[in-house]
Image (cartoon, protein in one colour):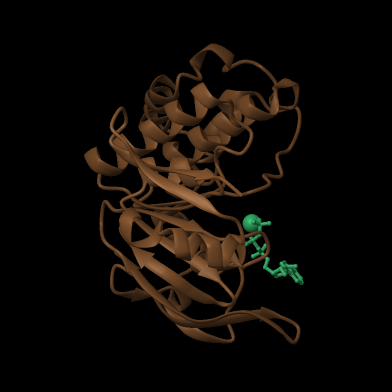
Length: 256
Ligand SMILES: Nc1ncnc2c1ncn2[C@@H]1O[C@H](COP(=O)(O)OP(=O)(O)OP(=O)(O)O)[C@@H](O)[C@H]1O
Ligand SMILES: [Mg+2]
């Protein structure tokens, strides 16, 4: 569904990533991890074609993204950025409805289908109760749930998330990631998520990519990537990696 081929990207003369290639299958949940400043957000910006690489290609569904218009990209892809600029004085419902924009044949003409998609998605993410609140009067975590709801209301084939749970408490972290995971599986939405929390990454992602020093340092299943050595090399801390049978997942503890 999504293929990244030999990407080289940087800002001015500073090369951030070089030789990055990977692919994500339909309905797969890929996690991207790595230390601060290693280029995770930059990679997402390349995938969404907001930042053009120096070389390399992004292909989805067999099409070179370079040849698609912004509206065509928005029909396929929904993005939850690390920092979301949101216009104030819109209600939650209006913000979520904005996610339907790429699907509207006539600009800003809301159809019955749009209303239903918004309603349905709000039910799923449990955000219906603050539909009439102003977005600028919500907490950081509540706002994040609205942004995630807007992305899902877009009914994307590919969902791109940059640290979606950073502002959420532990209950909401697990709730939102469980919901995303179930949508990935039921509706076969291909998902690429940057996340710092290694334990959440291990629990929810099918596959991981660990970025370090401009390259993919490790990739594969959680057990391939979460070795003591890999995590020590990249994060410069000693860790223990244990299987937690309660959640049937590897979990990492920093010990040094
Ligand atoms: N607009 C920009 N102009 C110049 N340099 C930039 C720009 N955006 C990012 N960088 C630099 O590129 C590198 C990668 O940044 P990026 O935001 O991709 O990192 P990240 O892995 O997402 O980090 P974090 O975990 O802190 O979000 C950093 O060194 C950063 O300073
Ligand atoms: Mg980032």
